[in-house]
Image 1 (cartoon, rainbow, N blue to C red):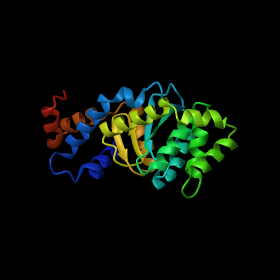
Image 2 (cartoon, rainbow, N blue to C red):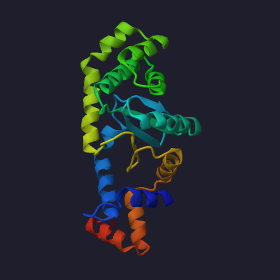
Image 3 (cartoon, one colour):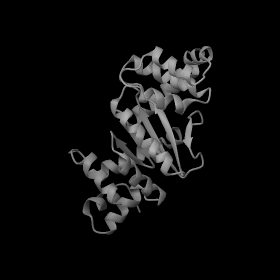
Image 4 (tube, rainbow, N blue to C red):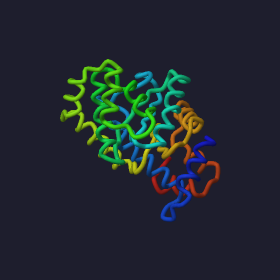
Amino acid sequence: MRYLIIVIFIFYSSNVNASRLEQLYLESEIINNNRESLYYDPIDIVIGNPDAKVTIVEFFDYNCGYCELALDDINDLLEQNPNIRVILKEYPILNDNSYDLSKLSLAAGFQGKYFEFHNKVLLLKGKVTYDDAIKIAENLGLNIDRLEEDYNSKQVNDMIANNKVLGYSLAVTGTPAYFIGDIKLEGLVGLETLQEVISLIENDIYVEDYIIELARGGDSEAYKVMVRYGLF
């Protein structure tokens, strides 16, 4: 509960057109309206426990330095919590090289090596070229002819296009961007923050419930949002 208060103040305090709580609520509604595509797209590769209650979705770009730093957070979460599932959404927005690496990563997934390839590409220092990525694939024992065929396939291109459409719908303008339950987190938020939001969802605490609880406790801003959107 404490973290949700922090989220409200950090991410919504600068908006002058609507209250912080109203912005948080409206964003949660956008997430809920896109829930199936965000959390349950059958073509997504799921890492961790496929039957877990809590899902973390990360939109990332291979040329994003913050995404490289965030890799440790995802790996630590998977190691520490056996009851989460992670979905990585390829979101190449920085340059054409990012797009090439995303296509190769998805192609590696068709050979069962998505997460291994993902980790090695992000951990390679400096700009990772197409040839660098092919060497990683070779070291992982992938069939390179098949990899390059899948790299050029309509399926891979469609997967990235679908991620772009979803990201635009969710107002993802930078990476990394995380979605957990009905909460969106932007930037390198850190392991502790991710753990606190996971705890909220594990305990069935969602944005609407939080606003109602605040309103019943006498918060006038929360009461206005509750009445305006019929949260009873």
